[in-house]
Length: 501
Picture (tube, rainbow, N blue to C red):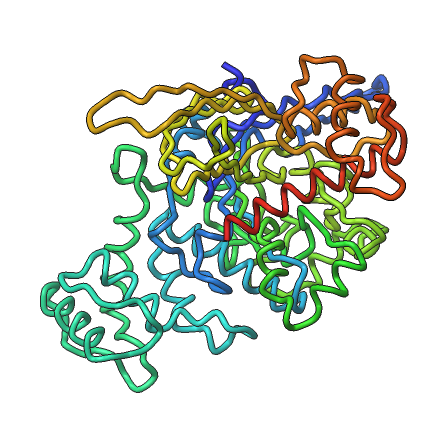
Protein backbone atom coordinates (compact mmCIF):
# COMPACT_ATOMS: atom_id res chain seq x y z
CA UNK A 1 0.00 0.00 0.00
CA UNK A 2 1.17 3.55 -0.71
CA UNK A 3 0.66 4.51 2.93
CA UNK A 4 3.32 2.01 3.99
CA UNK A 5 6.02 3.56 1.79
CA UNK A 6 8.58 5.73 3.49
CA UNK A 7 8.20 9.43 2.92
CA UNK A 8 4.43 9.22 2.70
CA UNK A 9 1.72 10.22 5.12
CA UNK A 10 0.46 7.30 7.20
CA UNK A 11 -2.58 8.91 8.81
CA UNK A 12 -4.06 12.37 8.38
CA UNK A 13 -7.09 14.01 9.93
CA UNK A 14 -8.31 17.50 10.73
CA UNK A 15 -6.28 17.44 13.96
CA UNK A 16 -3.05 15.55 13.24
CA UNK A 17 -0.72 14.06 10.65
CA UNK A 18 1.55 11.04 11.08
CA UNK A 19 4.17 10.10 8.50
CA UNK A 20 7.42 8.28 7.86
CA UNK A 21 10.36 10.32 6.62
CA UNK A 22 12.17 9.41 3.40
CA UNK A 23 15.50 7.68 3.78
CA UNK A 24 18.33 10.27 3.68
CA UNK A 25 20.79 10.29 0.82
CA UNK A 26 24.10 8.58 1.67
CA UNK A 27 26.85 11.00 2.61
CA UNK A 28 30.24 11.13 0.92
CA UNK A 29 33.16 11.36 3.33
CA UNK A 30 36.75 12.17 2.49
CA UNK A 31 39.26 10.79 5.00
CA UNK A 32 43.03 10.76 5.11
CA UNK A 33 45.25 7.74 5.78
CA UNK A 34 46.92 7.54 9.20
CA UNK A 35 50.66 7.37 9.58
CA UNK A 36 50.97 6.66 13.30
CA UNK A 37 48.22 6.44 15.95
CA UNK A 38 45.75 8.86 14.32
CA UNK A 39 42.25 7.67 13.53
CA UNK A 40 39.19 9.08 11.80
CA UNK A 41 35.98 9.51 13.76
CA UNK A 42 32.59 9.40 12.10
CA UNK A 43 29.58 10.47 14.13
CA UNK A 44 26.12 9.80 12.72
CA UNK A 45 24.10 12.99 12.50
CA UNK A 46 20.67 13.31 14.04
CA UNK A 47 18.15 12.14 11.43
CA UNK A 48 14.37 12.03 12.00
CA UNK A 49 12.73 8.77 10.98
CA UNK A 50 9.10 9.81 11.35
CA UNK A 51 6.90 12.70 12.45
CA UNK A 52 3.63 13.40 14.22
CA UNK A 53 2.09 16.86 13.79
CA UNK A 54 -0.64 18.24 16.04
CA UNK A 55 -2.70 21.03 14.51
CA UNK A 56 -3.68 24.25 16.26
CA UNK A 57 -7.18 22.85 16.82
CA UNK A 58 -5.81 20.63 19.60
CA UNK A 59 -5.51 23.71 21.82
CA UNK A 60 -7.79 26.39 23.14
CA UNK A 61 -7.35 29.56 21.05
CA UNK A 62 -4.17 31.47 21.92
CA UNK A 63 -3.57 29.00 24.76
CA UNK A 64 -1.52 25.94 25.69
CA UNK A 65 -4.48 24.07 27.20
CA UNK A 66 -5.13 20.80 25.31
CA UNK A 67 -8.77 20.17 24.58
CA UNK A 68 -10.37 16.74 24.75
CA UNK A 69 -12.49 17.57 21.72
CA UNK A 70 -9.65 16.86 19.30
CA UNK A 71 -6.59 15.24 20.90
CA UNK A 72 -5.85 11.73 19.59
CA UNK A 73 -2.67 9.81 20.49
CA UNK A 74 -3.54 6.82 18.30
CA UNK A 75 -1.43 7.85 15.27
CA UNK A 76 1.63 8.47 17.46
CA UNK A 77 1.30 5.02 19.02
CA UNK A 78 1.08 3.52 15.52
CA UNK A 79 4.35 5.19 14.56
CA UNK A 80 6.09 3.98 17.71
CA UNK A 81 4.78 0.46 17.14
CA UNK A 82 6.35 0.53 13.66
CA UNK A 83 9.57 2.08 14.97
CA UNK A 84 10.07 0.71 18.48
CA UNK A 85 12.73 2.40 20.54
CA UNK A 86 12.52 5.70 18.66
CA UNK A 87 13.52 8.79 20.62
CA UNK A 88 11.36 11.90 20.44
CA UNK A 89 11.69 15.66 20.57
CA UNK A 90 8.82 18.18 20.49
CA UNK A 91 8.82 21.51 18.60
CA UNK A 92 6.08 24.09 19.08
CA UNK A 93 5.39 26.62 16.30
CA UNK A 94 3.39 29.86 16.16
CA UNK A 95 2.15 31.93 13.24
CA UNK A 96 3.89 35.11 11.97
CA UNK A 97 1.57 37.49 13.79
CA UNK A 98 2.39 39.25 17.04
CA UNK A 99 5.74 39.61 18.79
CA UNK A 100 8.57 37.12 18.42
CA UNK A 101 9.05 36.84 22.19
CA UNK A 102 5.34 36.26 22.84
CA UNK A 103 5.17 33.57 20.16
CA UNK A 104 8.34 31.95 21.49
CA UNK A 105 6.81 31.56 24.94
CA UNK A 106 3.39 30.41 23.71
CA UNK A 107 4.86 27.84 21.32
CA UNK A 108 7.12 26.60 24.13
CA UNK A 109 4.22 26.31 26.56
CA UNK A 110 2.28 24.26 24.03
CA UNK A 111 5.26 21.94 23.59
CA UNK A 112 5.53 21.68 27.40
CA UNK A 113 1.84 20.80 27.62
CA UNK A 114 2.23 17.96 25.10
CA UNK A 115 5.36 16.61 26.80
CA UNK A 116 3.67 16.79 30.20
CA UNK A 117 0.65 14.92 28.86
CA UNK A 118 2.65 12.15 27.18
CA UNK A 119 4.82 11.43 30.24
CA UNK A 120 2.10 12.31 32.79
CA UNK A 121 4.13 15.11 34.36
CA UNK A 122 1.30 16.82 36.24
CA UNK A 123 3.79 19.32 37.66
CA UNK A 124 4.40 20.70 34.16
CA UNK A 125 0.70 21.43 33.72
CA UNK A 126 0.64 22.88 37.23
CA UNK A 127 3.39 25.25 36.13
CA UNK A 128 1.38 26.29 33.06
CA UNK A 129 -1.79 26.85 35.11
CA UNK A 130 -0.40 28.77 38.07
CA UNK A 131 2.50 30.67 36.47
CA UNK A 132 0.74 32.52 33.69
CA UNK A 133 1.45 35.86 35.43
CA UNK A 134 5.15 35.45 34.61
CA UNK A 135 4.33 34.76 30.97
CA UNK A 136 4.33 37.89 28.79
CA UNK A 137 1.10 37.00 27.06
CA UNK A 138 -2.49 35.87 27.52
CA UNK A 139 -2.08 32.13 28.06
CA UNK A 140 -4.25 31.94 31.17
CA UNK A 141 -6.06 28.60 31.36
CA UNK A 142 -8.58 30.06 33.75
CA UNK A 143 -12.09 28.92 34.61
CA UNK A 144 -12.85 27.55 31.15
CA UNK A 145 -10.05 24.97 31.30
CA UNK A 146 -11.25 23.78 34.71
CA UNK A 147 -14.79 23.42 33.36
CA UNK A 148 -13.57 21.44 30.34
CA UNK A 149 -11.74 19.01 32.61
CA UNK A 150 -14.62 18.72 35.09
CA UNK A 151 -17.02 17.90 32.26
CA UNK A 152 -14.91 14.88 31.34
CA UNK A 153 -13.83 13.43 34.70
CA UNK A 154 -16.13 15.06 37.26
CA UNK A 155 -19.48 13.81 38.54
CA UNK A 156 -21.32 17.00 37.54
CA UNK A 157 -21.46 18.69 34.12
CA UNK A 158 -21.24 22.43 33.66
CA UNK A 159 -21.24 25.00 30.89
CA UNK A 160 -17.85 25.74 29.36
CA UNK A 161 -17.86 29.54 29.24
CA UNK A 162 -15.10 31.57 30.85
CA UNK A 163 -17.46 32.83 33.52
CA UNK A 164 -17.30 31.61 37.12
CA UNK A 165 -20.94 30.90 37.95
CA UNK A 166 -22.85 28.92 40.57
CA UNK A 167 -23.01 25.87 38.32
CA UNK A 168 -19.24 25.64 37.93
CA UNK A 169 -18.71 26.22 41.66
CA UNK A 170 -21.05 23.33 42.42
CA UNK A 171 -19.35 21.09 39.85
CA UNK A 172 -15.98 21.71 41.51
CA UNK A 173 -17.43 21.08 44.98
CA UNK A 174 -18.93 17.79 43.78
CA UNK A 175 -15.55 16.77 42.34
CA UNK A 176 -13.67 17.57 45.55
CA UNK A 177 -16.23 15.64 47.60
CA UNK A 178 -16.07 12.62 45.29
CA UNK A 179 -12.26 12.52 45.39
CA UNK A 180 -12.01 13.09 49.16
CA UNK A 181 -10.27 16.46 48.76
CA UNK A 182 -10.60 19.51 51.04
CA UNK A 183 -13.56 21.63 49.89
CA UNK A 184 -11.65 24.72 48.86
CA UNK A 185 -13.44 25.61 45.63
CA UNK A 186 -12.27 28.61 43.61
CA UNK A 187 -10.20 31.28 45.38
CA UNK A 188 -10.29 35.05 44.90
CA UNK A 189 -8.11 34.74 41.79
CA UNK A 190 -10.64 32.27 40.33
CA UNK A 191 -8.10 29.46 40.66
CA UNK A 192 -8.51 26.07 42.31
CA UNK A 193 -6.33 24.61 45.06
CA UNK A 194 -3.06 22.95 43.95
CA UNK A 195 -4.04 19.53 45.34
CA UNK A 196 -7.39 19.73 43.54
CA UNK A 197 -5.67 20.77 40.31
CA UNK A 198 -3.21 17.87 40.51
CA UNK A 199 -5.98 15.31 40.97
CA UNK A 200 -8.20 16.82 38.28
CA UNK A 201 -5.32 17.09 35.81
CA UNK A 202 -4.13 13.54 36.45
CA UNK A 203 -7.58 12.12 35.69
CA UNK A 204 -7.99 14.36 32.65
CA UNK A 205 -4.61 13.35 31.20
CA UNK A 206 -5.53 9.68 31.51
CA UNK A 207 -8.90 10.35 29.93
CA UNK A 208 -7.66 12.10 26.78
CA UNK A 209 -4.33 10.35 26.15
CA UNK A 210 -5.40 6.92 24.89
CA UNK A 211 -4.75 4.81 21.80
CA UNK A 212 -7.22 3.76 19.10
CA UNK A 213 -8.64 1.09 21.42
CA UNK A 214 -9.18 3.63 24.24
CA UNK A 215 -6.35 2.06 26.23
CA UNK A 216 -3.99 4.15 28.31
CA UNK A 217 -1.08 5.55 26.31
CA UNK A 218 1.91 7.15 27.95
CA UNK A 219 5.65 7.50 27.48
CA UNK A 220 8.64 7.83 29.81
CA UNK A 221 11.17 10.67 29.92
CA UNK A 222 13.71 8.08 28.70
CA UNK A 223 11.78 7.93 25.41
CA UNK A 224 12.98 11.44 24.53
CA UNK A 225 16.28 12.66 23.12
CA UNK A 226 17.58 14.24 26.34
CA UNK A 227 16.06 11.53 28.58
CA UNK A 228 14.38 14.21 30.70
CA UNK A 229 17.76 15.45 31.94
CA UNK A 230 17.74 18.96 30.47
CA UNK A 231 16.79 22.03 32.50
CA UNK A 232 13.21 23.07 31.66
CA UNK A 233 12.97 20.19 29.19
CA UNK A 234 15.90 21.33 27.01
CA UNK A 235 16.36 18.84 24.20
CA UNK A 236 13.03 17.13 24.84
CA UNK A 237 10.66 20.01 24.05
CA UNK A 238 11.06 23.58 22.84
CA UNK A 239 9.21 26.49 21.25
CA UNK A 240 10.27 27.84 17.85
CA UNK A 241 8.18 31.02 17.96
CA UNK A 242 7.18 32.17 14.45
CA UNK A 243 10.60 31.42 12.95
CA UNK A 244 9.61 28.34 10.92
CA UNK A 245 6.28 28.96 9.18
CA UNK A 246 4.89 26.65 6.51
CA UNK A 247 3.34 29.59 4.67
CA UNK A 248 4.18 33.30 4.48
CA UNK A 249 1.78 35.92 3.13
CA UNK A 250 2.78 38.19 0.27
CA UNK A 251 3.41 41.87 1.04
CA UNK A 252 0.00 42.83 -0.30
CA UNK A 253 -1.71 40.11 1.74
CA UNK A 254 0.08 41.23 4.90
CA UNK A 255 -1.06 44.82 4.34
CA UNK A 256 -4.64 43.58 3.97
CA UNK A 257 -4.52 41.28 7.00
CA UNK A 258 -2.85 43.88 9.22
CA UNK A 259 -6.11 45.84 9.21
CA UNK A 260 -8.04 45.05 12.38
CA UNK A 261 -11.25 44.16 10.56
CA UNK A 262 -9.35 41.40 8.72
CA UNK A 263 -7.65 39.82 11.75
CA UNK A 264 -10.16 36.98 12.01
CA UNK A 265 -9.56 35.98 8.39
CA UNK A 266 -5.81 36.33 8.98
CA UNK A 267 -5.97 33.98 11.94
CA UNK A 268 -7.88 31.42 9.88
CA UNK A 269 -5.43 31.53 6.98
CA UNK A 270 -2.49 31.36 9.40
CA UNK A 271 -3.78 28.24 11.12
CA UNK A 272 -1.45 25.98 9.14
CA UNK A 273 1.53 27.68 10.84
CA UNK A 274 0.28 27.05 14.39
CA UNK A 275 1.29 23.49 15.13
CA UNK A 276 3.28 21.18 17.40
CA UNK A 277 5.69 18.78 15.69
CA UNK A 278 6.98 15.61 17.31
CA UNK A 279 10.00 14.20 15.50
CA UNK A 280 10.96 10.55 15.99
CA UNK A 281 14.67 9.73 15.79
CA UNK A 282 16.37 6.37 15.38
CA UNK A 283 16.69 4.13 18.46
CA UNK A 284 19.51 4.92 20.88
CA UNK A 285 19.70 8.52 19.65
CA UNK A 286 20.66 10.78 22.53
CA UNK A 287 21.73 14.39 22.98
CA UNK A 288 23.60 16.26 25.66
CA UNK A 289 21.12 18.97 26.71
CA UNK A 290 24.02 21.36 27.36
CA UNK A 291 25.02 21.08 23.70
CA UNK A 292 21.51 21.04 22.24
CA UNK A 293 21.25 24.05 19.89
CA UNK A 294 17.67 25.06 20.73
CA UNK A 295 17.00 27.24 23.77
CA UNK A 296 14.64 25.77 26.34
CA UNK A 297 10.93 26.50 26.27
CA UNK A 298 11.37 29.11 29.00
CA UNK A 299 14.31 30.94 27.42
CA UNK A 300 14.04 33.91 25.08
CA UNK A 301 14.55 34.24 21.34
CA UNK A 302 18.29 35.04 21.34
CA UNK A 303 19.30 31.39 21.16
CA UNK A 304 16.96 30.85 18.22
CA UNK A 305 18.41 33.78 16.29
CA UNK A 306 21.91 32.36 16.65
CA UNK A 307 20.75 29.41 14.56
CA UNK A 308 19.32 31.51 11.72
CA UNK A 309 20.53 31.22 8.16
CA UNK A 310 22.68 34.14 7.05
CA UNK A 311 19.60 35.26 5.12
CA UNK A 312 17.20 34.18 7.85
CA UNK A 313 15.39 37.51 8.12
CA UNK A 314 14.79 37.56 4.37
CA UNK A 315 13.46 33.99 4.55
CA UNK A 316 10.84 34.97 7.11
CA UNK A 317 9.94 38.26 5.43
CA UNK A 318 6.85 39.03 3.35
CA UNK A 319 7.84 39.17 -0.31
CA UNK A 320 6.11 39.82 -3.62
CA UNK A 321 4.34 36.45 -3.71
CA UNK A 322 2.88 34.13 -1.09
CA UNK A 323 5.34 31.33 -0.32
CA UNK A 324 4.79 27.78 0.92
CA UNK A 325 7.57 25.52 2.22
CA UNK A 326 6.60 22.57 0.04
CA UNK A 327 7.00 24.72 -3.08
CA UNK A 328 9.82 27.16 -2.36
CA UNK A 329 11.71 25.39 0.47
CA UNK A 330 12.74 28.76 1.91
CA UNK A 331 10.29 29.67 4.69
CA UNK A 332 12.24 28.28 7.68
CA UNK A 333 14.63 30.84 9.20
CA UNK A 334 16.33 28.36 11.59
CA UNK A 335 18.96 26.30 9.76
CA UNK A 336 18.94 23.60 12.48
CA UNK A 337 15.20 22.98 12.21
CA UNK A 338 15.37 23.32 8.43
CA UNK A 339 17.88 20.45 8.31
CA UNK A 340 15.63 18.29 10.48
CA UNK A 341 12.25 18.99 8.91
CA UNK A 342 12.51 20.72 5.53
CA UNK A 343 11.58 17.50 3.72
CA UNK A 344 9.23 16.15 6.39
CA UNK A 345 5.91 14.88 5.02
CA UNK A 346 4.27 16.40 8.11
CA UNK A 347 5.49 19.85 7.12
CA UNK A 348 3.37 19.97 4.02
CA UNK A 349 0.27 22.08 3.66
CA UNK A 350 -2.80 19.85 3.60
CA UNK A 351 -5.91 21.38 2.09
CA UNK A 352 -9.64 20.92 2.34
CA UNK A 353 -12.16 21.02 -0.50
CA UNK A 354 -15.93 21.38 -0.69
CA UNK A 355 -17.81 19.41 -3.37
CA UNK A 356 -21.54 19.87 -3.92
CA UNK A 357 -23.55 16.97 -5.31
CA UNK A 358 -26.24 17.54 -7.96
CA UNK A 359 -28.62 15.41 -9.98
CA UNK A 360 -28.54 15.45 -13.82
CA UNK A 361 -30.94 18.42 -13.84
CA UNK A 362 -28.57 20.52 -11.73
CA UNK A 363 -30.61 20.24 -8.54
CA UNK A 364 -28.70 19.81 -5.29
CA UNK A 365 -29.26 16.46 -3.53
CA UNK A 366 -29.49 16.89 0.25
CA UNK A 367 -28.37 13.81 2.25
CA UNK A 368 -26.95 12.18 -0.85
CA UNK A 369 -25.05 8.95 -0.08
CA UNK A 370 -21.53 9.01 -1.53
CA UNK A 371 -18.24 7.13 -1.79
CA UNK A 372 -15.10 9.15 -2.48
CA UNK A 373 -11.60 7.95 -3.36
CA UNK A 374 -8.71 10.44 -3.19
CA UNK A 375 -5.32 9.50 -4.61
CA UNK A 376 -4.06 6.35 -2.91
CA UNK A 377 -6.39 6.60 0.11
CA UNK A 378 -8.93 3.97 0.93
CA UNK A 379 -12.45 4.81 -0.29
CA UNK A 380 -14.54 6.73 2.27
CA UNK A 381 -18.31 6.80 2.37
CA UNK A 382 -20.84 9.09 3.99
CA UNK A 383 -23.90 11.27 3.56
CA UNK A 384 -23.68 14.78 2.08
CA UNK A 385 -25.59 17.04 4.45
CA UNK A 386 -27.15 19.92 2.47
CA UNK A 387 -25.54 18.33 -0.57
CA UNK A 388 -22.00 19.24 0.51
CA UNK A 389 -19.06 16.89 0.94
CA UNK A 390 -15.96 18.28 2.64
CA UNK A 391 -12.71 16.54 1.70
CA UNK A 392 -10.35 17.26 4.58
CA UNK A 393 -6.56 17.21 4.81
CA UNK A 394 -5.80 16.33 1.21
CA UNK A 395 -2.19 16.26 0.11
CA UNK A 396 -2.30 18.07 -3.22
CA UNK A 397 -2.29 17.79 -6.13
CA UNK A 398 -4.44 14.67 -6.21
CA UNK A 399 -7.06 12.92 -8.28
CA UNK A 400 -10.51 12.30 -6.85
CA UNK A 401 -13.32 9.92 -7.82
CA UNK A 402 -16.74 10.78 -6.43
CA UNK A 403 -19.69 8.38 -6.65
CA UNK A 404 -23.12 9.40 -5.31
CA UNK A 405 -26.83 8.86 -5.62
CA UNK A 406 -30.28 9.77 -4.34
CA UNK A 407 -31.14 9.20 -0.65
CA UNK A 408 -32.44 5.62 -0.29
CA UNK A 409 -35.73 4.69 1.24
CA UNK A 410 -35.66 3.57 4.87
CA UNK A 411 -33.64 0.40 5.27
CA UNK A 412 -32.62 0.16 1.61
CA UNK A 413 -29.02 0.05 0.40
CA UNK A 414 -27.98 3.29 -1.32
CA UNK A 415 -27.61 3.16 -5.08
CA UNK A 416 -24.72 5.27 -6.39
CA UNK A 417 -25.98 6.26 -9.80
CA UNK A 418 -23.57 9.11 -10.57
CA UNK A 419 -19.80 9.16 -10.94
CA UNK A 420 -17.33 11.96 -11.55
CA UNK A 421 -13.55 12.13 -11.66
CA UNK A 422 -11.97 15.42 -10.58
CA UNK A 423 -8.60 17.05 -10.17
CA UNK A 424 -7.93 18.68 -6.80
CA UNK A 425 -5.82 21.83 -6.52
CA UNK A 426 -5.41 22.81 -10.16
CA UNK A 427 -2.85 25.59 -10.17
CA UNK A 428 -1.88 28.12 -12.81
CA UNK A 429 0.84 26.56 -14.93
CA UNK A 430 2.18 28.82 -17.68
CA UNK A 431 4.85 26.24 -18.45
CA UNK A 432 2.17 23.67 -19.41
CA UNK A 433 -1.05 25.54 -20.07
CA UNK A 434 -2.57 22.60 -21.94
CA UNK A 435 -2.34 20.39 -18.84
CA UNK A 436 -3.82 23.14 -16.68
CA UNK A 437 -6.65 23.76 -19.19
CA UNK A 438 -7.41 20.04 -19.47
CA UNK A 439 -7.89 19.72 -15.72
CA UNK A 440 -9.85 22.95 -15.27
CA UNK A 441 -12.16 22.15 -18.16
CA UNK A 442 -12.67 18.61 -16.87
CA UNK A 443 -13.74 19.93 -13.45
CA UNK A 444 -16.13 22.34 -15.19
CA UNK A 445 -17.81 19.48 -17.05
CA UNK A 446 -15.76 19.10 -20.25
CA UNK A 447 -14.42 15.53 -19.96
CA UNK A 448 -10.65 15.05 -20.11
CA UNK A 449 -11.28 11.99 -22.31
CA UNK A 450 -12.32 14.34 -25.15
CA UNK A 451 -9.81 16.15 -27.34
CA UNK A 452 -8.58 19.36 -25.74
CA UNK A 453 -9.35 21.45 -28.84
CA UNK A 454 -12.97 20.26 -28.79
CA UNK A 455 -13.34 21.14 -25.11
CA UNK A 456 -11.73 24.56 -25.58
CA UNK A 457 -14.04 25.35 -28.47
CA UNK A 458 -17.12 24.35 -26.46
CA UNK A 459 -15.93 26.45 -23.52
CA UNK A 460 -15.37 29.42 -25.83
CA UNK A 461 -18.90 29.09 -27.20
CA UNK A 462 -20.44 28.63 -23.73
CA UNK A 463 -18.66 31.47 -21.95
CA UNK A 464 -16.93 33.56 -24.61
CA UNK A 465 -19.79 36.01 -25.13
CA UNK A 466 -19.29 37.32 -21.59
CA UNK A 467 -16.14 39.10 -22.76
CA UNK A 468 -15.70 42.15 -24.94
CA UNK A 469 -14.48 41.39 -27.47
CA UNK A 470 -15.87 37.84 -27.35
CA UNK A 471 -13.55 34.85 -27.31
CA UNK A 472 -12.67 33.12 -30.53
CA UNK A 473 -14.48 29.80 -31.03
CA UNK A 474 -11.92 27.73 -32.95
CA UNK A 475 -10.53 25.78 -29.97
CA UNK A 476 -7.18 27.59 -29.92
CA UNK A 477 -5.89 28.02 -26.37
CA UNK A 478 -4.79 31.65 -26.65
CA UNK A 479 -4.01 34.06 -23.81
CA UNK A 480 -7.54 35.49 -23.64
CA UNK A 481 -9.08 32.00 -23.38
CA UNK A 482 -6.65 30.96 -20.63
CA UNK A 483 -7.39 34.11 -18.61
CA UNK A 484 -11.15 33.69 -18.98
CA UNK A 485 -10.97 29.99 -18.09
CA UNK A 486 -9.13 30.89 -14.89
CA UNK A 487 -11.73 33.58 -14.12
CA UNK A 488 -14.68 31.21 -14.65
CA UNK A 489 -13.01 28.50 -12.59
CA UNK A 490 -12.36 30.90 -9.70
CA UNK A 491 -15.91 32.24 -9.98
CA UNK A 492 -17.34 28.74 -9.55
CA UNK A 493 -15.07 28.16 -6.57
CA UNK A 494 -16.13 31.47 -4.98
CA UNK A 495 -19.80 30.68 -5.63
CA UNK A 496 -19.43 27.33 -3.91
CA UNK A 497 -17.78 29.02 -0.95
CA UNK A 498 -20.60 31.54 -0.64
CA UNK A 499 -23.25 28.79 -0.78
CA UNK A 500 -21.30 26.85 1.90
CA UNK A 501 -21.78 29.76 4.30
